Length: 377
Image (tube, rainbow, N blue to C red):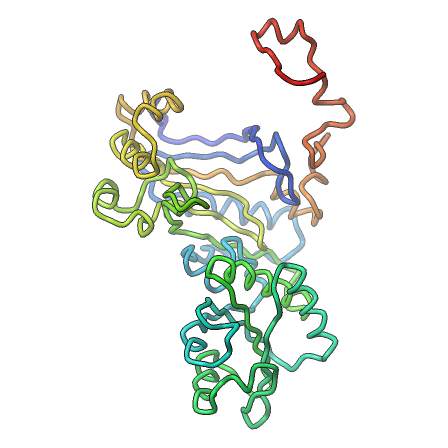
């Protein structure tokens, strides 16, 4: 954009030091990278949605949900789905019932964030036992539940802890009907959110609620610009080079944890295909944004000299996105891991077993590049 190109796209190999997981390979992967000058978030959505939609339509026999794809703010996604990568084929939604249970007498829920998930029908004893086993496997102490009877009374382990005069309120709060079952998850907020998301996914699988005959897309928008790290310090939540919503005024006047960024992810069936952003093209805003996260102007000049120097010449506002080609192929071929669709994939330790890489480096090779290893032979 600084060089004067108003737009571009490329299929680009990328190299990133990442831990391996089912949808992410360590080292190299490919992106359908695109950017446009003078573009808004909506311009990016309008450009990429037909490409993604028609790609999945052409190379799969499954149903493909039409665009425009739903836009879900990050905060809403974390509350309703317990993740910023929601699988919208799963119809279950998480409900916050924290305030309600602070007025009850169930001690394990007091002073905690409490989330609930409603499902239709009563479950067997064996189903509850298996769900309890799963809950314990992800670190939960238990999994409370209530079943709604025909007369709209409750039956379940925590029924006696809910005052009779409050039971109608819970029915209305969770939109409960006769023969519904509601599950409860309680912990501190971030963990309750994560655990509720995992319980939602497991319930969707065990109850066979997920429509495997289709691709369902959505956008996650309005990511927080900042968050607190494990030490309580302000740090970037997502992409530090995104434009904060509200620009310099927001950085100067707002609580950093309340500032949102023009960042967005496109998600398909619970898999993040791509992150994108309206880029921060202003050196002044960049310096201020990094200062809030504890970095000096000198740090930016040292670590990102090409970007920072280029912006001194006047970069236009620009935005872009880069969907992962490998991930799309993984979904289209219904593969279990991204390594199934990559030629010569590395294993989970980032090793290429066929090539024997990485291998040992000789002292002569290290000397050529002025590197000395202070490790035992």
